[in-house]
Length: 202
Ligand code: 5GP
Image (cartoon, rainbow, N blue to C red; front, side):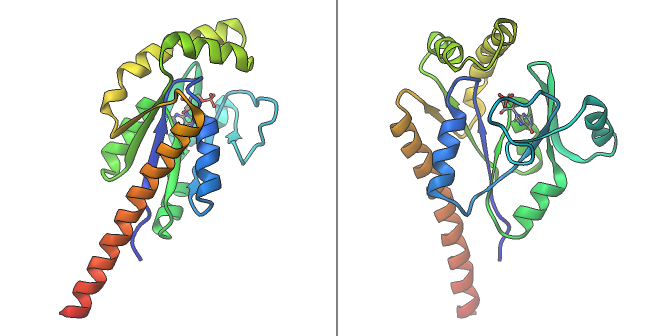
């Protein structure tokens, strides 16, 4: 059995990553989700251990010192990190895994795991992003401004990604995401199949 493949999903706040991710997992329940650690407060409806591991800044900094993170970054004033052991356990068991992390984290992971597939989700425009974030209503005005100014920077880095999905219509964008992931997962199977055939032949 081969190693699982990593899929990285990034994109600015308000681009609709959360919704697209949910439809992806409904279509592919065998895909694993990497639960990150964060120091930000829990939002209504979030569950510790499912959406994030919510930890204090002290705990997070100790984890950094112990080198527990595959990558970590400060995003919108809070720390976020992916635990090395969690990713290793999943991909070593042959399962594919999705990481929803920011552009800095995505760079780090790609430099360590070269075959990770990076997908960027974006809204059609910054105005549209602002509208969606305001409608979501989960952030204060100050938090919203931080997220919007970061959105412009993140969108400028989209071209580093293997694929960009413009989320102008949720149903269409979900289909595109599912199709992409399916394509890469299918490729892995083909490769495994080819290796098996070669072994049989020799
Ligand atoms: P939110 O607070 O809206 O859940 O996430 C804020 C940002 O942090 C998003 O861009 C999200 O992708 C990113 N993020 C979540 N977990 C991680 C992580 O483990 N590492 C990094 N680098 N970014 C993360």
